[in-house]
View 1 (cartoon, one colour):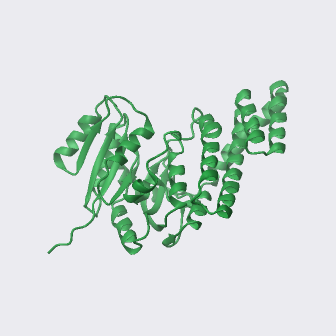
View 2: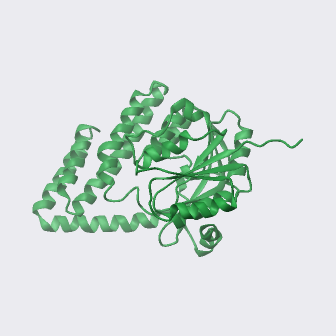
View 3: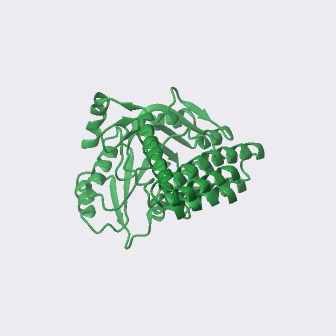
Length: 350
């Protein structure tokens, strides 16, 4: 008698990217582990998305499609997909990303090897608009690691954690910690990982499983104020109130998160200054002072902002410093040559 293998539900939230969506779906259907179903959650695209999915459905019954009657927002659409999961495992794939054929087979193997793990995550490569491939160093590990709380929580705090693209979750995580937080539309995956890692063990493995298409959407200028002024403080407040985390680990986590967010906030203040957005820059200084209690950094930023407003040479100096930092930071990412890109490019042409 043939053994029945567990089914994985793949959730693909989508909005007006029909061609990329088709590629994402095909990357799932090409898995060497065939026991899966794909749920496409269309956030009222009102374009050719339905036709693209219908054509795929004609050839593969594992794909299903749901279209919202109106655009309900990114996070509610994610949550709708998660609410439809009835299989033992699930994953979430953004419509412009792809997974490699080995992803599900590797993840299921790890979850069967570590039955207490609530998720298994592999390595995700990032490809930017210029076609450069990078494996973020902080996300890379040389061998599989089974991590239990509270240490797994600290790993996530320190950004040593798989990307959503290359994670398979056990369905019970939905029963235990619920869905994505509707009040965190831009950092909901971070919040979810923090909640998960504070309570449950998980496993990371070194196999390359997914390709993240870097389009800078999450870090666009329009989204930066929301992330810095609303979502970062909310995440720290949630960690502060999370009684599942031992007090000493919670304190370490809060301090580590605050240190990271202070650095991001300070850089954002200088970027706002370089762009002449002085009011936004002053808001970052106020956040450093009032929420994070970094009074000297706040004072220094205020001095730079006010001086740049009324002293053009200093403003030009800030602009030059920003341009230098931007150029240097782009070079600091571990990138790979054209040959490395060629090895992955075939998965982007599905």
